[in-house]
Amino acid sequence: MSKAVNKREHRRIRLTPLFVEPIQIQVGDSDKLVPGIMADLSVAGVSIITYTHIPLGKNISLNFKLGGIDTGVIHGKVYKIREQSSTYMVVILFDDFQEKIAKDLENIAMDFEDCETKWVRGDFDFCSQDCAYYSYCTKIIKKEF
Image 1 (cartoon, rainbow, N blue to C red):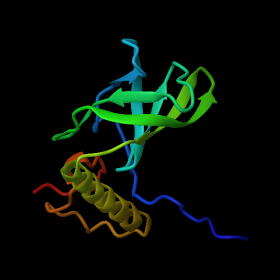
Image 2 (image 1 turned 180 degrees about the vertical axis):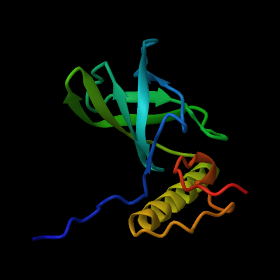
Image 3 (image 1 turned 30 degrees about the vertical axis):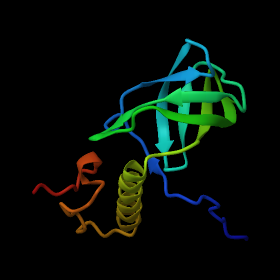
Image 4 (image 1 turned 135 degrees about the vertical axis):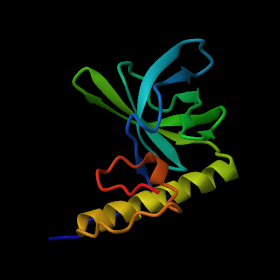
């Protein structure tokens, strides 16, 4: 059996409603806003669930808040789209991202990944106030400080 290879350059954060609120996506130069829910996020892009088909290659603009991080307006392009029943999973690649926000997201994603790995291995004594993911964590074993 061959081993799966992760080709992603940046770590991802799986998002829960605790992380973000629903977002509005501006499609092209249109005034039309498409509502969506972010599913996962990295410095390179975001996966969004929508009820509206957004054409492949279409330019978009969006902004969101992730905990204490306010991204401001981010520009990107629809990279991939997959229909699932009456919804669409839209993958958007960002054109650029502020360096400070990118660093914060990388730190959150790294700590999230470390947490998940330890959790799967059965190590439940790893919570730390210094964890960048701590304020977003919903695990029942989360330590109180």
